[in-house]
Image (cartoon, rainbow over all chains, first blue to last red):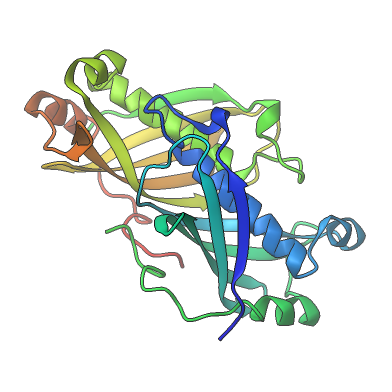
Length: 144
Length: 144
């Protein structure tokens, strides 16, 4: 069983919509911060991107909005890798407030070198696989 | 064949990420503006929400990021309804820059009355169905 990666942040006032709760785009923004955190953990940080011309591009995202999130909430995002195959990375984020799961995001991303898809370097792939865990039951499904 | 609903906006500088392109969360923000535009068109505007205590909550979203989008790009979002059944609305947004499709979003939303799911009023459902069009081939699929 792989390691669990966690990222923490606090809901900012400018992320709140007219219903008084976290707006849908800002769940995705926070999930993006958690993706940046994963990239740093596996060596795909700002320096790697500058030195190699490589980066990670999100191709598809499936978000499930499960609960409303109040202003100033403390968010925890746990990240797990589903698979790393060649140039493709599949992974999931789960967002919680306290013990309550409030949203999930399943992602497909591509490793790119100078804007063209390219296999992950072996060392980066190996570090990504440290966070590989069993596939959640919501992954791979269409909107239902 | 239903009507096509379009929404226009321009990419703002604060939506650009470290790669110099529209950041993933801000595609979702723009799609959210297009959802607000749909709500206004079918009578679910701010006054409706205040008068009735009803609103529309996004439950799931599947985003496909197809092309990078440059700063200051002129965006067009076309919106089409897939189905309106009881309290559930399925719909899609497609984002273009000029003639190029840059992203799609498939959504499942619930009509809620005072935070509990409730069927759409008949007149709102009828207006939503004006925008009903054939189901796009990417709808209903898992991440692939």
